[in-house]
Length: 208
Image 1 (cartoon, one colour):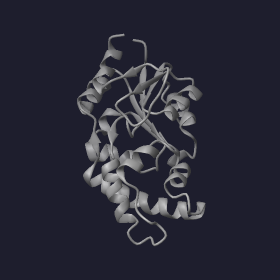
Image 2 (cartoon, one colour):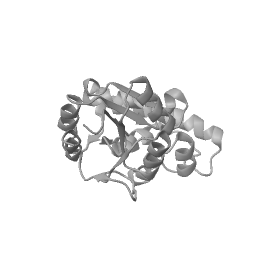
Image 3 (cartoon, helix red, strand yellow):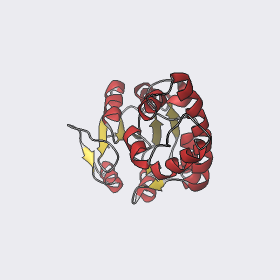
């Protein structure tokens, strides 16, 4: 088999949680007088995969970095509670694909998110048994490329592949020295990379 482990990005790769996040952020920001309007689903799609600092600077350019931190912490708390109860939208055939893959290869998640975000995904969709490990910038303070390398090393995975949907994911995989697969059904555009059209295409990795 060509790979001995698969590492996944989360947003735009495993699920689309933008609708749920938009609802939760509207709730979190309803008493924030310096926020003209909560971000729309379309605006959130444009910032998926960014670090918290870049995301908040893009969504609220007129506010200070300190205010960004305050609002992000508030939004994350409401968002995590909401997502744990309601979940997001798994991409078509995602659950059965993950369950099939996990019978043959160890699966992992590496994402630029807060520390509770990935557990919310796993809790809401009851997918804990599909993944052996996960990591994020909210827990380590490290960028995605370093976390990809960290997860591979601590799980003794020698030939992993990273699946993501944005150019930032591609850059992170390159930094970690890991092959990259572009999930074209996600939010981003990537050039010069092998790709999958839908989650079930990942099953072809078991045949290579």
